Image (cartoon, rainbow, N blue to C red):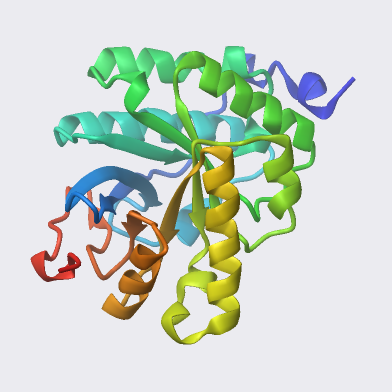
Length: 252
């Protein structure tokens, strides 16, 4: 019996979270059309406390219920703000036991708040320690079958890398900000990112560069054919709000 099968049933053992949280939303832009492609939901404390202050309270007992509550609150908040485009939600793969069962709360929230599931992206951090990689691949396969889009975040920062990409091709790869920082002056980073773009182009995967802070970074990445971008250059995360894109951040 796999770890996911042995853990299944936690959804019947409801745990009340003893902490509150909400979200900030950061735009993901398409620089080729100078428009907002999506917003990423970033967990925060109810008074704007850091993500760490919330995530440090997640443990084996409450992980499933926290993951489920995150999905509901992210969707509720996005709908209340009248958000357009995609909504990107981070999920904890080790909190999903049977995708077809664990996804039901998401379906219910999307219906309740009138947010189409076709506009939801589920993303997982590549550096997230995944105990059972075939289980993660199964989750992604099921989510795509249900009509969601999928993304691997922080690509290039963790241990999975190309091995994970060989097993599963998501809709979007988000290049880790460590590769993005000062890429305009770092030949080694340039070579790596060019390689990632070439692979993703061959596999039909969109590439998104995150953590962009300078116009020089933006311009180099744009020249490589990367149109989806995210970072402080465009807009910082907006606490319980939709941020405004800096009009000077668009390429000429």
